[in-house]
Length: 111
Length: 114
Image 1 (tube, each protein chain N blue to C red):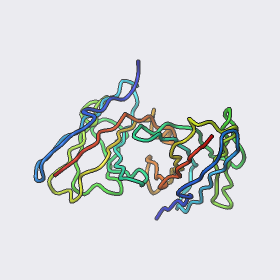
Image 2 (cartoon, rainbow over the protein chains, first blue to last red):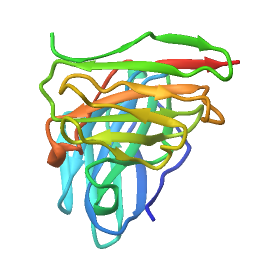
Image 3 (spheres, each protein chain N blue to C red):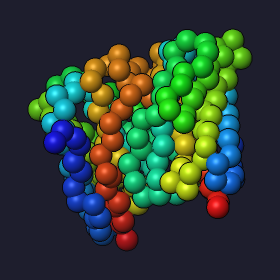
Image 4 (cartoon, chains in turn purple, orange):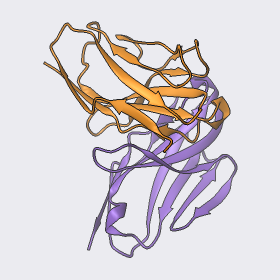
């Protein structure tokens, strides 16, 4: 089966950099996605990595190492509005065209 | 404005009743998905549909049913057979099956069954 592991909570201060790790176990890996969800809201797509390496989108970057079954989301210049839950998700051949989500990491940013 | 709508935002039902959650999208997306989210948990896949008149079970399909008669609509019925139906239900869509990595979510329906 598939499984994803990510830390349950991370805390940081405004202006800092934080890294949220995700390790996965799947049977036919296609790629790793990241989503942000504010409390009570809808998840929104942040990034996707199908190949090894770093993808940068503004203050957010995402990294993937297929050989290590590992990825991370890097958030720079943290702002209070970044306080949210962050989910990694994989698409693999067993899940068909759907995504399998991790349990999420709650990021708390303080001033 | 294009997007996904789910209604209602809050829904209350008595145990033993079936209830249908609405999901409509005007993004012209082929694929649609239903997830369940419990407090402090990730999203768990209930059902998904790649095209009209076709749908597949996800990890936790027991006690749920869906239909996909129109491209823009993917309603979810929570039946009385679902043991713990109280949860936050999220509907999503993607352009096509190969674009499942980027899904667009509706605002969700919070269902409470007592």
